[in-house]
Length: 275
Image 1 (cartoon, rainbow, N blue to C red):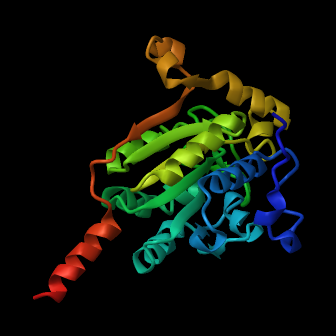
Image 2: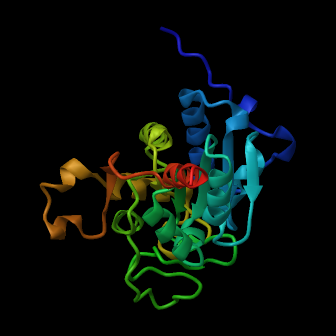
């Protein structure tokens, strides 16, 4: 069977290109995986909404030919929630970086998870504020360097997937920009899930993070992802010492029992109409 070349052009606003991402940035890999996943799900373009806040990852909506909105810092989920509540039939996707999602947007993140609203959130985790000067973010690994942790970070980082599960999300997974085929499959699974789904993608910023941490090229950072990623099944047989400095990949949670918020809200509204 001959595989035909995927037509990315039909999902891109070519007049907005070239993009602003640095050569070798993993964000482009995630963008392409997202487009292939949407195509596999066969969603009409007019039924897809992509919302973002501020940051490198958050420039993605400007390049894609869906309903898109580029909002303020940390507020991607705020706008996405409003859109989903007003038009629940739409497939709403929130795009955020690690700082955008878990620092200034942290409260919105935990409450979207608590509500279990049907939004797919993709967190581009490159351990840094890449667009605004390379400051440390809530996910920066302990002991690593940034413009604001020149002696090494002493803060314990957030584990985005653990946080999502604890807050109430009903689909949680992690992949990397190295594992492009796996990434596409995970996005499909997250999109098809009814409820708040969170996919964390470990990606590379060799400019702001890598060059301060002995990984000056995209190749070195992609090798880091390959070597440090451990599938959850393999991790089950590893000690804490063996897992030190590594991260698990896979689908950690897929719960279909918890009610979805926008549907429950509409049920309540219909009940009130009859009173």
